[in-house]
Image 1: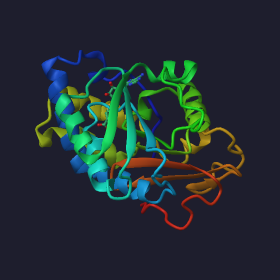
Image 2: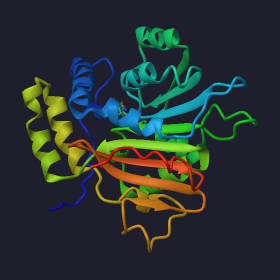
Image 3: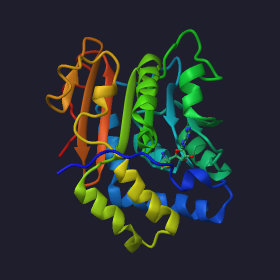
Amino acid sequence: MSFARIVVPEVLDGLAADDPAAQRSRLDLQRVHRVMGTRTTVLRALRTLPVKSTSTRPLRILELGAGDGSLMLGVARALKAQWPAVSLTLLDLQNLLSASTMADYAALGWQVKAQVGDVLTWAERGSPESMPEDAPRWDLIIANLFLHHFQTSQLTTLLAQIAARSEHFFACEPRRARLALAGSHLIGALGVNAVTREDAVLSVRAGFRSTELSALWPEIDPNTVHKPTHESTPEWTLREYSAGLFSHCLLASRGADAGASARPESR
Ligand SMILES: C[S@@+](CC[C@H](N)C(=O)[O-])C[C@H]1O[C@@H](n2cnc3c(N)ncnc32)[C@H](O)[C@@H]1O
């Protein structure tokens, strides 16, 4: 049984970066990711992508709504052998990237920088750091627990810009389902604070299911999006799928055959 998507502002987004409740909630988020298995879900998806570092330039990766960058750091640790040279930009409303997290990225050989701003401004006006001519698009744009913050009309704009400015895109979002909703109500058992408890429920209610994200992707034939969890267009291959008990993912690759031989495990 499904329920309608409802988007309301999350408590964390209204708190200053140095608010103790916000700081605690961001630490809680790391625990929530461990329970959700987010890092494994992200790794499974990224390992299917035909993305390679070259000797001429690092891979250019943009994470939208990156928070403190800790989730992607775990991904970087696991991927450093495959992707030794990466230039990673972490876009968020707040500057949450600590010196120690930057040092951890540097130790892996990944260059990281924080870009503070609203993703909707990024979508409307473009990045202040425009891409160099030899690489008009990001190799990969990624979003974790982020797209669910936005209303459908905003998502349409955002996904159109992501499609225009990237070679590959991956999002791991809350699954809008009864089990996930029940789990979000029980999240207090992890010892998380009131902000995290409230936002967990709001996140699931604003989450995604079925082919809801694919349906908003540009260039998709609206007559086909109701079909399976895997949709293709001449230019993009899309896979929208459930992962673990609580996550819902969209993996988009430019090129009809991209990643076709290795699909991320889905349930
Ligand atoms: C639930 S947290 C997820 C953080 C991180 N991606 C993770 O999975 O751990 C959502 C993040 O999105 C950021 N955010 C919310 N609205 C935003 C916007 N309009 N533009 C940029 N960042 C935004 C928040 O500041 C917050 O860090």
